[in-house]
Length: 231
Image 1 (tube, rainbow, N blue to C red):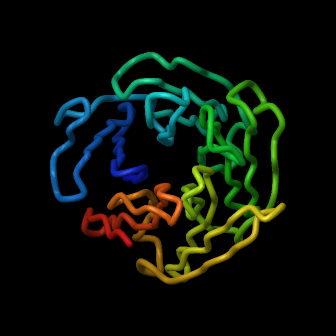
Image 2 (image 1 turned 90 degrees about the vertical axis):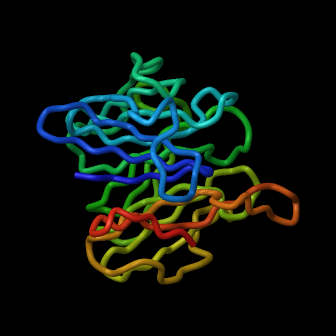
């Protein structure tokens, strides 16, 4: 199984086979290349069945990886991109709850990122206010339709993480901003309908808004040809 996540100008992807740990490969290049962080061999992190995300967990040193374990609904956060023990471990959500993990700086452009979960069956986001057992004050709301896949990036360059969903049945993105509540402000087709494309997002080409802040756009990772397609 191959899953892709984009953040900034980096790509993160991992594969798992049998009972081996996920193998993380990072690159700073938007062209076909080998991994560069920490080296071409990548590094193992987490356990079989874990889902990998990446965010700025300490609010200072850029994006590093974390593993989400569905069987226990635990997060294992690392403050470095290397094969190390987790610096933070906590449970958030229900074990085997059918979630996809997300992360970001919800409603603030300062401080560390916190985690979130998207319940695919109910199209419900649950956003943690802090990376602690239970997630602190949890914000819960519906966005999208059952079966959608979540994404989290900064769509308008204000430094705050925004949300969206990718609808595989349509090959369509639905992007949302906070207006006192979460609301879709843009929807468009990008990628193929079906189950071959997996959504990613990031600031691929150092795009900046009128306030000089960087903003993100979407992309897909196509499992049939192992290629990224970036908007």
